[in-house]
Image 1 (spheres, helix red, strand yellow):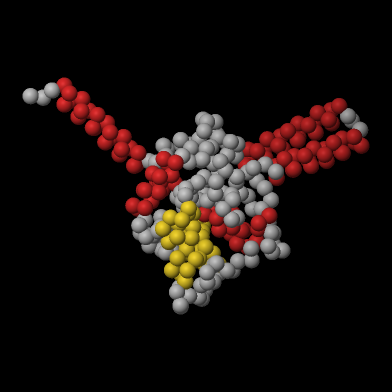
Image 2 (tube, rainbow, N blue to C red; image 1 turned 90 degrees about the vertical axis):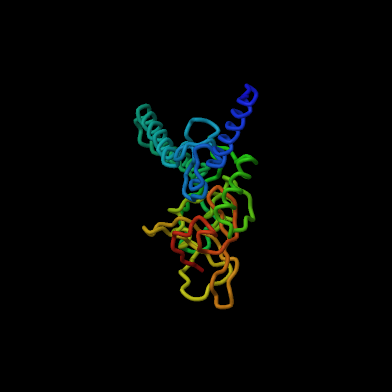
Length: 267
């Protein structure tokens, strides 16, 4: 005879299974496994709202920060101009306001002078991000374990050498010794500023590998860590979005999430 106790046990088991399946589907609420390995996100709170957001308020984007600073500058200049008709007093005030606005913009955490790229006369301004941002948080131990397990199953040919973290992405590892997050649209400038040229022949340890999609846009990067006697790349090291850092063969679906992309090498 079926008892109430048996029914309760069945309900508990079903709930446990549902919770387990939900956890394995998304290690972080709002982010799929595909999202976790992407290397182009200004802030997950404004681009991809998720449980990483410490609060529900989106972080101020780089463009919004600049617009705010310029708006305050214009307002200040207008007020000064209304109170002081003399050109001799207005011009120095405007100049000082511009200096303060410029200093505030370039010292803000989302747009700084990329000193690590100043290796050639072609120095430019590379935008990189210090994370977690104001409305973000670092990954928890449980989230890191979940991400590691999911990626180990999806890409068994890769060896994890670093834990997941939101503080830097693949380009931050490649160009800025694991300190910052650099979006895909900055990579071409970073390569140019470092004097990197395409390698057509034998590759060497230390060369940079760049992945591009069918449209030719950069999606990922890493550094060559092993080649064979013929100069063919056998292993690269790269960080997979906010997931961990991995040693893996450069191509192949079992080796990384970027197997559908084409690769090129730079030295």
